[in-house]
Length: 214
Image (cartoon, rainbow, N blue to C red; front, side, top):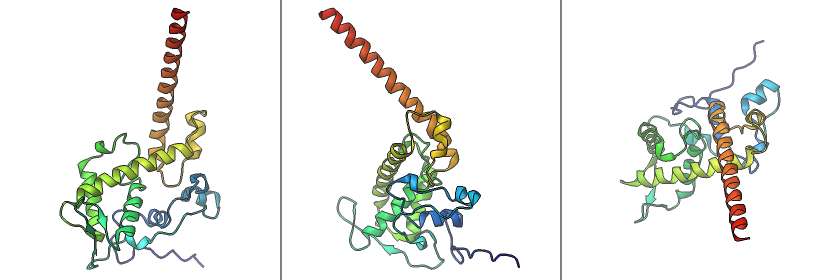
C-alpha cells in the first residue's frame, strides 16, 4: 500500500508563497543554540528525526483564509504597537525577520532590500492585521532591527572565524537558505581578514611610535 501523503497545513488558505515545510519550520521559534536545529532537508536525507525546536508558534499565522477577519493592532503616538495583540504581532514580525524568502541575510544593509520586497512584506502583515495609517514605518524599522539581530546571532553561533569557508559550510542553521549561506560565509571571512589587517596596521603603528619615543 502506498504511504499516505501528508495533509497540507495550508489547505483552504493562501500561504504567501511558502511551501508547507517552510511553514512547519516557522511553527517553532529557533532554539537558543542554533546548532541544535538541523535543516529539515538534511534530516530527511539522513533519515533522522527532527532537530531540537524552540517554543511553538502558531503556523496558522502564516496561512490567510479568504474572508478571514484581520486582527486589530493599536499603536501609540510614537507609532509603536500597544494593547492585547501586541505580543503575537511582534512575534509574527520576528518570524518574518527569520524567513529567508522575505528578509534575505545576504543583503548587507536592510535599507538595500528592494522596495518591492518590503511592499510584499507589508502586504503579508496587513493580510493578518489591521494596521493604523502610518504603521508601516514602524513595521519596516522593527523588521530591520530584528533582521540585524538575527543575522548577528547566526554569525555568532554558526560562523567560526578560525575555520575555512569550506569547513564552515556544514554549520548552516536550519532557517538560513543554502544560497544565502554560500554568500554569507565569504563575506564574513572577508570581514575577518579586514579586521586582522587593521589590527596588524595598528600594531605596526604602535611599534613605530614606541621606537620613536624610545
